[in-house]
Image 1: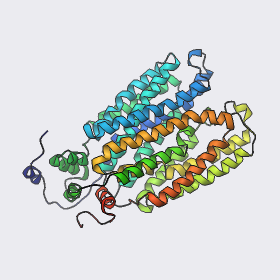
Image 2 (image 1 turned 60 degrees about the horizontal axis):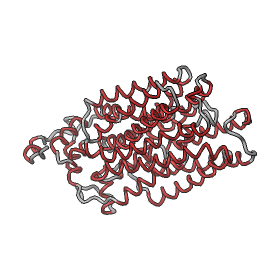
Image 3 (image 1 turned 45 degrees about the vertical axis):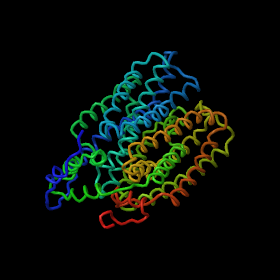
Image 4 (image 1 turned 180 degrees about the horizontal axis):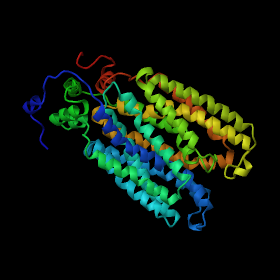
Length: 458
């Protein structure tokens, strides 16, 4: 594909009064984050399904503790592979096409699980939906961040996390009324809608610029911002950035995604019903409200303030839970009859508060910051690397969690998660930059020069 000539690009540049419109931008973001809805749906699929399988009359689908561990954790292994795939696809075919391609393993995986006749079919279905989840995790935040205007990027950057929580909530709600096979069928619907909608959405203008298609980048910005907006000034800021610095923003992003998983969010969500004996609907509803609050505050309070609040909240709740668990003798977690009902009620309440803290900071902001601070030239590859590291970590934690709880009780993992939350706060204070109100090019320029002024003024 030939690069656009300067004359062709100049012909597209016209002086118009600035009047920014976000309607089409919101539509494009909605189309993309439907992939996150399916991600949240597939991630927690074992939570209501495992109890149904254990109570079912088909011995081929009943699981022991080792099989339960694999059924819960293999999704994260697939997600790690999906993240590696996104490293290649993001820059090869573009962010939008990569998101659409995630629909293939998602659709196949859900069909395989819905038709499963044995344990291995369930594993393959989980693995395929994990691949889809990893691809979306490495491409959707990048696409949303690159097409968003700085004034709403914080709020829109929270949308992937919000829709993922919606997906989990839908799964738990449907799990109360639908047999587990129909849960898999229901998961196909948002995938199909996402692929249809994205056919009509623009490619990221920053991806076009990276590929040398300046005229197409201008057209994408005009579509997203409106023909009467000051989209040309935004285009010039993107086009003028040179010589990015790679290592520091990539390192910060990778460590943040690693620490996010080390807080234990994935194993707790995956095993919410079989271990904690919670229906999770109230928990996910609390998490949804918390993410919505974070989205409304992201562009006002700033990213770091919410990260600090989130970390402190989790330290408080994890430490209290650790003390409560440690005061009990070893409690088997695979048989609810051995767990004191008062302790279960306490655990339910404290887990809700802890997840509210997570959802206000370390849940959505790590995804947003990853897509904000990564330099354009490395954003596609580095985002896939971050997702790969994140989900390999989640796989290890989810695989070990059942065995640790069975051997030592809940106090051991909660103590570990408490220590990780302390590390999160220290890392935020020392290494994470504040990106509120800055364009992606200003953030990239900050890592290159250490200065915070706009590129055009430099």
